[in-house]
Image 1 (spheres, rainbow, N blue to C red):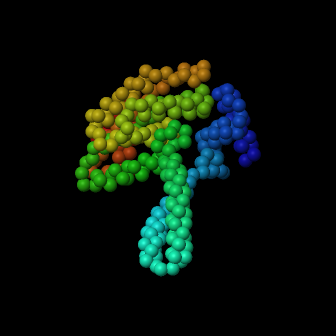
Image 2: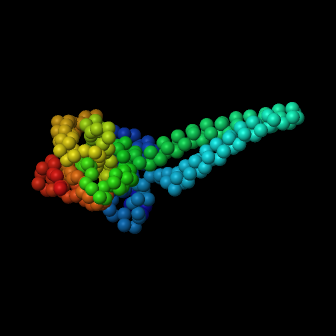
Image 3: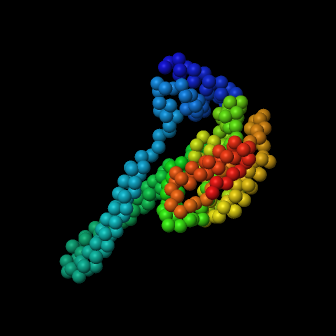
Length: 293
């Protein structure tokens, strides 16, 4: 095991040197994890333990949100009850009792309002944290978890009819060559730029998701095949004319894509499978785009 770790560490330092990056902890950790996750010889060690990043516990987030909703409900009831008490004690004769109760109620209401403000801040932070769970940290595309969540919501409406929904899988050609020849940092740069190009060419209602290493899915909701196909063709055309500059490197990338549209009773697996078949056909026939009906 020690020999294996030393080997990965040596390759990490070589990649950093190739990319002209110092071996700072953040750079070192990222490259070490990338190399470790690519090594299939780690049979005695689960590679996921080396490359998975900690994430928020979704059950905890959900529980916290439910707790906040309950606190909101209770504070609302307390506030209304306190106001009712104030109205009732205005009829009471003893002035000192009346003033004390009014002062206490006012104090209670003020504290409840302060608590509500803190809860709103916490809600905002939780919402931000939950959204980060659905974003790929490298490319800032939505991640696979977000894809499954969004498709499940959309497909729920398509059990009895065809929907105006198309999905495309786009895949960088020969991405391993880029990683092997330029290094993983350059490969990461290419992925980031790739997503930026796609994001600039699709509608705000369309979404891009990182499905696998260099494989991305675009969901065209409320779109027919003709419009979705035109959008993919614009993307392929733009990428074909773009050279990415990284330090002294000029990198030309090409992309293959497969596209399909929704059929009645499709589930997440079936619609993605058809798009994947279309992508496979595009790869083996050397066409940039294939459609699977």
